[in-house]
Image (cartoon, one colour):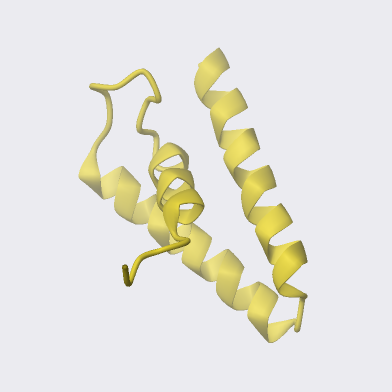
Length: 73
């Protein structure tokens, strides 16, 4: 139960790293890059004192952009 609530972040990092939502396509090094990008964005939002709700919205928008990009690549 430690990781409760991290589902959106994990899926976002994987999709941002290039893992296909259809399955079977992706590299672990790209997923690590996706994790680093999301971690940097989250850290920057914390330093800017952005509200947790707005941070969740930004993470959702990043996921949406990654899914749209994955669909059309």
